[in-house]
Image (cartoon, rainbow over all chains, first blue to last red):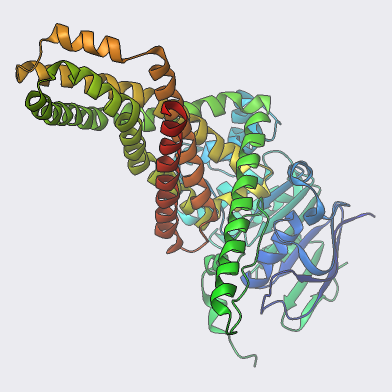
Length: 222
Length: 299
């Protein structure tokens, strides 16, 4: 089985007091990985995965590429194969929820505006957000906002889905449904969570803990 | 039991303060600490010069990246891009018309009243049109239009983009493969250039018109004499000059304010600092370009 994400003794370029030990971990392609950690670890981890940060030491490989070493157009091409939800969520405040999903599709050349609107409506439907489609992000509750970010991340059926604490405001029953939806929408899914979530752990192929003692796979996970 | 760190419970947004302040699309230059030596004045001067050079290099890189973004729009984004451009022109040009028109009327009347007072004293009332042309059409018109656009739209661009950066919107765009310079900056630069070019023509037309009415009301000259004097003073080159100046001012203001907004930092207090930085850079740019135009065109 090939590897979707591989970190070998990685330390971020910028000093981060929370990243006390070099990180070594891997996520096989096709797996559903849950990492229980803190926001101060998951945010730089996600940014290293998409190439917004570069590693000060060690080696980062995501889908066979070192994201930070790609040139600008290469990085944009690479990122178009990912579905990403960072913290803060980055929903564009002057666009409706629907247009927030349409925008990456049209700017990435995946669809024209009408095709992208259909894809966006389908993703909104899957996440149960049709009634919020025309609202702006500032006018919706936090759980709807989080679901909109997930809809934006899965709309183009990415190869790798990277979600940073995507269910913190969502009701646990909805979280289980959304996690199952993520599983069917992308080949590989990596979810960082900042709190215990049994529904998520049950769905996951692999669960890991990452704290001041380091990164360790949970006993029993494959 | 593990000790609990207080920041563990802060909202994740706090983390954005720790994220690096230079956007990913720009090279980073670390300022050097000035050394404590007897020659520290020279050292500080050298440091400032290096920093200025580094800033100039980053700005050049930024302008290049914006232009590259503008030339590589994906075909699927054209409709969205055109809508973005129209929104920018509507906000910068159309919505500014009442305010700019009022200022144009006041300037036209002021210049004519002042010029008439001097012209009557020296018995040269027939030069009123010529004075209005050289003062307003060539100099004040483009300059005041640029300052009004800077006050209305430049500050809005800097504040909007700084807020986008603080809220993580630009990071999210980058992470999704969208070029923020292509989506956020290029339509504003092009929209700014088109808007200010049109607004300069509007401003000058209103000023000349209100000047004519003021001259007629003061019984300084007849409308016919005034228009004849204008016809003699104005040349097609003046139109090219004012439109060209306007376009360069508009593009420059939008670029510098966008640059200040995106480079400003990632915490809420950085937003007003970005706006101030954008305004200062733009004012310097506008006055420098205006002086350069005058020197090149009229010496």
